[in-house]
Amino acid sequence: MLARLFASLRSSAPSAPLLPPTQPTTSFAQQARSMASSASDKPQFGTFANGCFWGTEHIFREHYAGGKGLLDAKVGFIGGKESSKNPSYEEVCTGRTGHAEAAQVKFDPSKVSYAELVEFFYRTHDPTQLNAQGNDRGTQYRSAIFAHDAEQLETAKKVTAEVQEKHFTPKGKKIVTQIEQREAGDFFEADSYHQEYLYKHPNGYQCANHRLCEFAQAGRGRPMPDASPLSHSDTPCLALQGGDLPPLVSAP
Figure: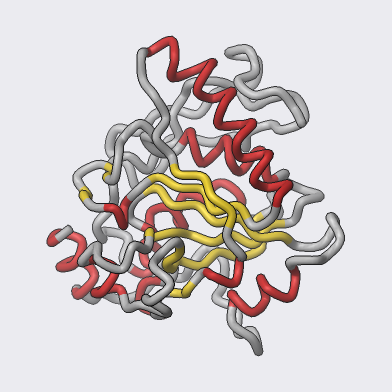
């Protein structure tokens, strides 16, 4: 955690982000609240925690930006104590607020399904690590999916069960990912310094677990994006090429 905190305090010349920052008239959380009852073809939100939040945001942007379904992404905090509203980065790093560092993605469901995003989430970290990811330790780095309605909750549980059965059970491992339903608006955005951090600081701290791991091809109707080894991993897992392995998760 100290390495990440030191990295957070360093500054370097920013480079152009993959997705230009937007200037909404309302916050990301307010947008999430207003879209909670939108039709299925309208933008939706998904919130995922799997360690250092700027790495989570970065890997989603790398694979789903550029017309592949990702409309925007923010890093922030969710899942904390009721008494800890809008915590600071430093407060969350103590582990006392109960929040998880997370990325909230705004996506176009006509281009990428929530089920695919859940499967992608499992392919880009180690969900068998409890309250940690890589060298980052603490409940704030836990693996978690925060579903925003009953349909997302059901989908997250279904995909999790299939990932467990088809990938982790044969290895004798168990997924410990927390899955709970929370309003999208319960997400508290981190400060601007941490948004798109790895685009501004390409040599900044990165969790070694944030890489696209080759364990199976997505289910029919949910093709994984073609992916090459990620630039922010020295020894990345390689993405599957179509047809290499049978589907991991069946289409919904």
